[in-house]
Length: 514
Image (cartoon, rainbow, N blue to C red):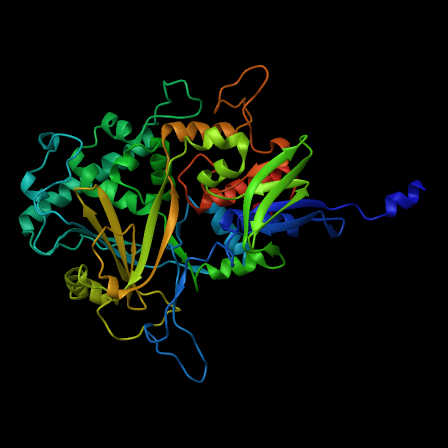
């Protein structure tokens, strides 16, 4: 009898993965592909509230008439796919994401960008947080040149000396470049030599804010508001004031790890990664999860609504892969903790309203050095070889009144992709597609909460007494994954790291980390 039992198939553990973004799909993929003695250990079911997978759901396929290449009637080729949001990643910081793409056979390339920085106000230097007298440069250089651009930066395609914007004299430009170079070197050196301070507020594993760090290492207001914040906020997609409240360790760590490293984008769009990760997965679409509950610490009941009807199922484990505001709504043990993690809504718009960038793009198009590098302007009607990403422009436009920077990408398909769009800046009749995202922000308090949930030390994100201790990921067979589930900026790398953490806890092999 004992021998017969040993030969009987081992029961597979049932796992619910709630959410099909990058973190959810990577976790589900690792569990499904894990093999023990030739068979899968886990029976995974992905629960998704939309009618399609979330990772690439916001992206947009242009109508063939809007694409830079007209539809070929013989081949039936569709219009160009536009990733939303743009899925660029930097070597050094995104090492696990890059390794995963290489393992899956997802191709990526080094696109070349030209960044222009400009403001919507003509006589302000963005000094909302200090006295301009502390800046060692004439306030006349703070004024906007005639075409709005005050700096042009080339990424993955370094051009030295930097291209001089129109409206700035050669003498003033030399002074500006000397000033910028000095403080860039100073800030970079500080990132490598000066560690952010630990918090004195009693919060474990949290530290000083970016604003406090910049003041401590004597970075002037002019450099901060004119250069650092507009460029960094294009990554964090939040206001400059919100960015200054980020943990300094986030920005310092990013600056260290991406220093002199190339940037990449997925060739053919993130849909290629989604297809690889979702292959073989069982997915329940149109399923909105309403509650996740541990049962005696051994099983997990997941409740949901689908097509207006409520249902529930008991699993061995549950993995929650959604934003913290949703976690707080569906998982009671983290309801209070999630309220300490701020979120905001960010809108991305695909459109053909060229009014705001027309002069900027024309100026870049006519620059001799960019012409030699085959710069592709959105104003050009000629088609491009999309297999070889051309040199395109990314315009960072800062509204000084709201301390916000929108990024406008000149897509090779002759459309603009505006992220964190400023109000009233786009003609509604020229909008092709728009989508809202939930952006998770970082603060010293939220850093402490997140680190407490995922650390091996006693948790402290909620009041602890002898009868009740704070919940940690994995308790009651419930795990949390997501871009926000690590001690770093809320980016795709966090999705991979948190998924790998769950795999490690369950004894699952991570093939790209061998």
